Length: 154
Ligand code: FES
Ligand code: FES
Image (cartoon, rainbow, N blue to C red; front, side):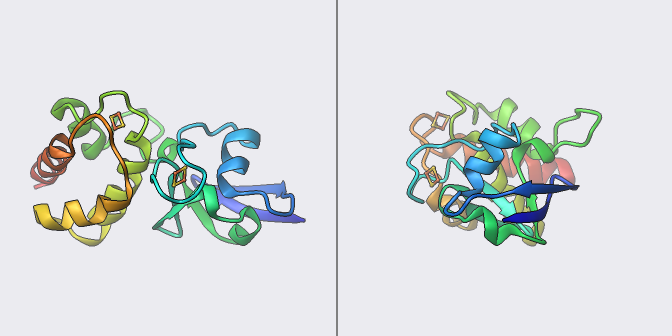
């Protein structure tokens, strides 16, 4: 079926196949490889993108269900001039990017959290990222990055 979906602020007309996931649409046909395929079953959070501002697992979300909606991927976080967001900069500076496989998903989850809560507590940060698995950082650097980003916004 033909759908229109807004991806990173641009309306795209795309033909989607039955059972095609949003992750497959983004990575394989729209060339947006930021969202990663870790588990393909909604368990690791590596594929997290925002759908109308809310984090979802794109690996299990039907592309067809995105018709008329707005998808934001990690490629759409930074403004067109390439300047990193405060959260992205804090990830780099805090050592929260190690192998980087989980990073796009974590950024999307935390971007949504910070849109709702200007200064989340550590417990709120840890609760928000419970579905984003990171094998490298032990999560402490991620929590530090959020604190740094919140401080930078003040
Ligand atoms: S790849 Fe989607 S949750 Fe793991
Ligand atoms: S930085 Fe390697 S999995 Fe998170």
